[in-house]
Length: 274
Image (cartoon, rainbow, N blue to C red; front, side):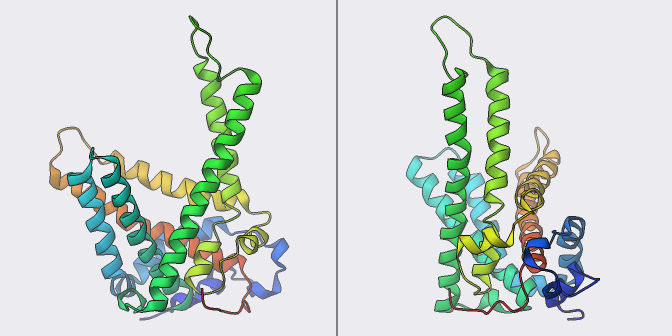
């Protein structure tokens, strides 16, 4: 297999061991993380293929089923498809995290009770982060909007769309910085190092904007690049390839979060069942 994935700690901190840097003083090596998110999967593409074949195919299948068969269907069908998509994504994410952080090549194909428990806990944590994002965004959005009158539109007047747009962007930025303090709980769950949000909050001190780039800006940029390939009048085959490319980009995004976890956590954190 060549160089082991578990070398990511030394790769992220080439000058010294992670344990030599106090947690409160660590700064995420953002450029190294972003570069590694692309380069490491390619360097270890054989291991990636072996580990992620089943979960990646599941994610691709669910994505294609949604895009071609469930688009525009009723609420129940859409909700069910989103839950199934989240399950497939969580399966892939747990597999990739364990590949990067534990060098566990075969975890994606082992149907064990503990493996599925990890996926279930990962799903719940991922959903909880989404709820935190919505709360952190819409609470200040509504409070400021009501206090300033931006959200109030009197009869016969036009809404202040510019002010609303700035308020929306500002509240989104704040919410992204908030959830970035919690995202390291996801790889922690995957490698059995606990599921406490307070631990992630402690480990991410001083790195909010860097982790916001990893967790939010990078996926947004990859999504934007992917849809640049879309053209009006394109065939279903072309559209399917774009959907598949998005699933492959998911691996890059997960690797970036794994490397962030490797750079900001301590070497001697004990593993424990989820």
